[in-house]
Image (cartoon, rainbow, N blue to C red):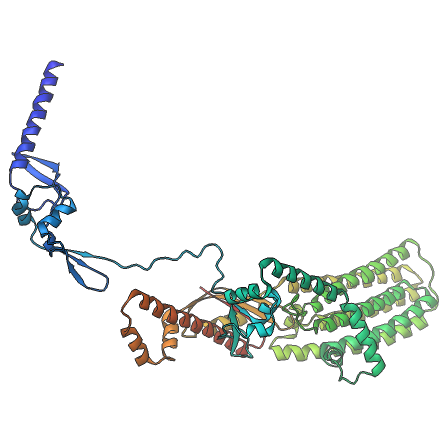
Length: 569
């Protein structure tokens, strides 16, 4: 233990003597406050240096953000020398070593001060720069149009296609004006509450007012031209539906008489089939009239899907009324068969029904062919994709009606030849199965349309290529194109815009010489900030104009595209 302690003490004394020799020895180069390397024999030691480099203030130059140079070593107003200034900095060193320290550092140190614009804290809610329209200012802040005349008016780019610019107001100005008019926030809140109650009362009386208006029109006579909703039933799908309603209504009446006279299960199924077709097509007519309604705030994209809803309900109705009752009556006939009277009148009514249903089927086929040709689709694609749900229902119902007439006539003929009433019941089951298949197809196709299916890949590719070919677009991501029904498409995409092209588009509309003069006049940070804010806002407006241009081009080149949402990536 004792030899070890002695060796440790000898080692400490050796290090201390080495440290003193290092302090006394001249250092050949500056020790910039990091480490000094000493070598003794074959061993090298890295010893931390406790002396920081000190330079006379006459050699220190400070450069500000505007490039001006300031010499800190010059005498100040009190006549203090650079040596005194150096001591004020707090070097803690004796003046006797000034010559040695000056020899260490020969080149001056340049300190560059970086000017950074102070970041503004806007908080979680900041509405001082918000713009609002005059209508919103009047409704939300209970102001009059005369009150807005005294406020600052700002022209902004309009979001609507029919107007280029429109007038907006600063929200802060409107809020200040409302407080000036009403005196306090409490008074403004009371006025808002009163107006809300008046609006609710008006809505409650709206139905009564509409009824009175209809009574006045009936009394004085309505001289207005026929409405567009009524005109829809004289062409296209509306015409097909109205023809089907008239024919199926007559068929139901005559088939019902034949069933009462003969008691045939197949004839009963045919009568139920015609009744179901008549009710379903009346529902289709209601859907067509409702789809012609103009969009409102509650339904901004319109009521086009009412046709699909009506067709879906029609498919469910066919399944429940047509297929369900036909199966029920066929099973009852199998369980409790009864003899059938003369079928002559039944055959005559079936023949008339075949002719009438065939005529309606031809009308629906011609309409679908014309529409499919206009869309560039085949007959099968147009039907499967349910492009026109109303015509589809008429087509499938009449096709099922023609086939069911053939099935019923065949089964009734077998019953007449063999006298076995089971054939007639089997015919009723066959008609029910046929109606169930048609209803399942209608339910599937209309459900797919209501869920919002995508458009065809070829059409989507054309839309994408049209956007990518524009010089302002770098790339397109997350493309979605939804078929809203009745040849209306909603297109959405994330667009990566080329900022250089947008900026160049902005510069092409500016006076470059005047812009250069503005740049040369910028001398201070405040002027630079004002310059950047002004032109930065204008560039953002230019980007918005480019988005509007792309949306307009998409709609013009693709009439099916009605709604375009381009999001800036």
